[in-house]
Length: 594
Image 1 (cartoon, helix red, strand yellow):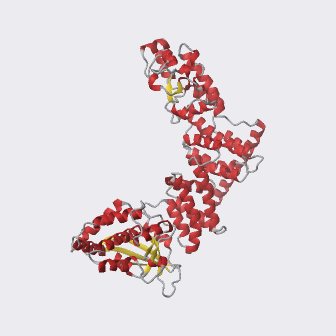
Image 2: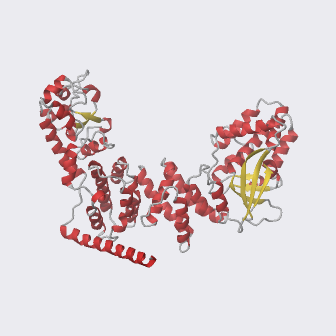
Image 3: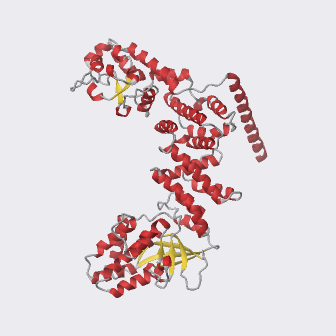
């Protein structure tokens, strides 16, 4: 490795080509970045006593490809591409500005810093951006296209072009002088001798905006031959594009974390650790597996993650279940669900069994939320759940049911008795998933004429009681109000909440709007509101009666898995044997260490 101070223009003067590798992020500097660079240039241009201005480092690898006689050498840029590209766009705009008043300087800028004049094709260009950016950049330098695109290249070129459009020749020369004072640290690495990834990590260890996925991509691809990079990057870029297209780009790191949880036998890395954990994982696997197989495997699981996180599943029924699971915001289940997705795709389970597992996962999470079971153990529960399953077609679903039924204490699956007891009196209105569960209850037997998306949560007994309501509830109105106001017996869905306001029950039941439309709860086609038309009073007895009906329905909508006692006993014995084996192993290890 060789590191030297250098002027940026001196770096660009040599007949080389600075190549941005395909694994690098696309060019992303915006107008704020350009404005900052512009201000820096002005500050040294306007002060003759300022000899230079440092703008960062440029790190590149040489020797990647053998240089033929008469050709320029390709230098692979691993850090500093944003600065290189932006200054090149600035120089292109400056050369254009000089054309009318000083053709010699214009030609000098092009020949010294932008083009390798004796080369042909792509070799003509002193800088060669990554594949997705290359055409736009070349077109700008060749003055074939400017305003027809809204890419960062065109936007930033036009930004500088606008700065120059009204400048006199003397000021243009002053700007050119300012650019000549820009200094960088030039770090040269030699292929096969230096470790470019180590240097790259060191430079980016202080939070310069690279995601963990960016670092991992570079770690895999950086030191490979260009052709091998291109082949592998094609798969990786497809994965990145899938996350962007699904508007999940910010979740790429989370996916990598969940993927590593799967591959490391349920050990959950922290977000800070995932890069280092991946390095060890990759090195271990690459000893026995082809690199392409590893990347293909990551890509495969990313497809499952995207289906779990967005509406990408093409099976409409499965997608509807996943939508409900997303409503519960239970991302910690994704490592397990990705494994089940893979088992379904590999035909270890049927579509119907996959659906049943998804429903039980939803039920498990929802029942625990209702019963107030702490959630801090869920990540470990789901991370290791797959290890408890029998991965053959005959026993897969059975072993899954047994695993979740046999969980105890803070990992338990609340049974029907606990679920019904708590749900009868639970404050459900302030539960995060309030409209989720009301909508699920309604959709269990949906009415085809109802647009449920227009409905919101309605308190039948209103949150603010009028004198009429207090009289309706009787002497114990305050106790009834405090006990039942936010419980399932008093909550429903409606599209006319504003119209109902705090009206007495009879008016809510029989309300007709100004257009003579019957909009009262008694006319509602919603299954949740069945029976309200037959009531003349809304009191404690009716609230409890309705609560009982809805809670019984809830045990069907969010079911508890069923297995015979004989089968459960079999799995209970096996689970106990596993625990004893693990304890024996821990004791043996401890004894050896002592």
